[in-house]
Image 1 (spheres, rainbow, N blue to C red):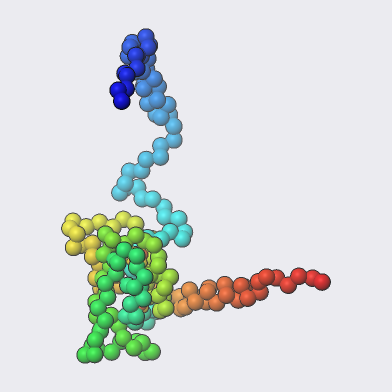
Image 2: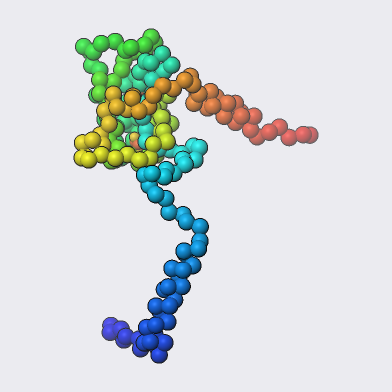
Length: 183
Ligand code: SF4
Ligand code: SF4
């Protein structure tokens, strides 16, 4: 099909009205409130509840919370997590009541989509999505964070079993559903 070129009107052929209209847009924006940010000098204020990069956390005694159950590796949609279990010859876990620790734990931040499934599924509350959104590296290899780096970035998590306490409360609230009706 041949599409015929539309004829320009007299004003369109003048070119000047389009120029003035363009300048008018520029002038209008000049007086408006600026929304651009001088990154990285100016930083975005992360809202509460923001889900950024997932990091491993230690407990209040500085011990590794992860017990290498590999649930997070299993649920991770883009397969960003790689865990090497300790094996039979590994040293014992660094805390009581923990059977094992991962020998290696890696997250490929180039693959991670910050979905939060790993945090949701973790039975030990060992991995949390933190507010870090600015992840940079000079090579692809630098974007694969190993266990030591994840633990260093994750820091210490003081709240014991906060997630399970919340889940228990939610379950208790659901038990009362539907509410008893009068009569
Ligand atoms: S946040 Fe999602 S994509 Fe990233 S490591 Fe966790 S499960 Fe995988
Ligand atoms: S981070 Fe949590 S879910 Fe993942 S292996 Fe460790 S204990 Fe299991």
